[in-house]
Length: 231
Image (tube, rainbow, N blue to C red; front, side):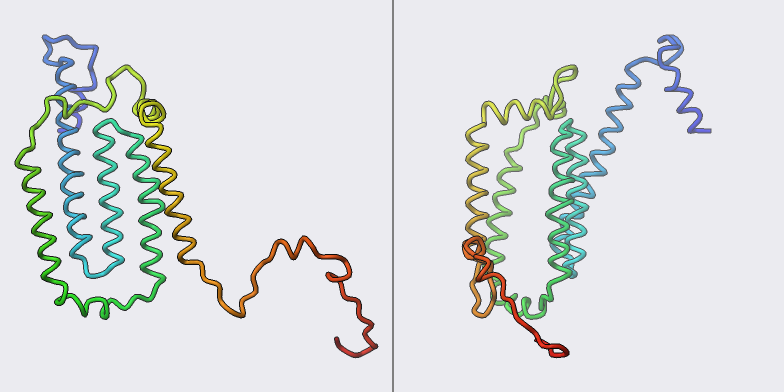
């Protein structure tokens, strides 16, 4: 009965006047309340999954909690009107990076017991860095001021979409920075290939120049094999 009452209250928008108890402001209040509810749901799950990534003993569980954190962060982006960032977070980080982490953890035979042997040795250094990071977080949160425009959409209603606005800013005002970031990533990729490339003895490698320079005399060898005798 409660569900039918709710439908009967909000389903007749436009067919009732203010005297019957239904106004356009009711829908706005309901929408704001729904956004607040979803914000707290996504934010709570996001914080909980982020903590679970650190405290989980099984690395596979840590990666799964990381995927859950990415999905909740994408939900928060959607609430802010940044649908492009939400889709990028799901497609790139969940669909590529997190899945790659999961494959690496599951396929590699990592000896986690051996990795935990030096835990006590590096514990003081870890506590020192944790204290520094915690102090920075406290300093940032203490100076936090809530802006009156914090809950506003990424782009005003009735204008271009968030994706178009991001593209206009990225390829006009920050075009050179965008290209510089691409060059840095390209350099890092080439450096990783050069560092990991190792020439092992006894391994046949493809030589394009030698293949192109072949002649029929060197590429084909004709042999006369006697009957019932193998090569």
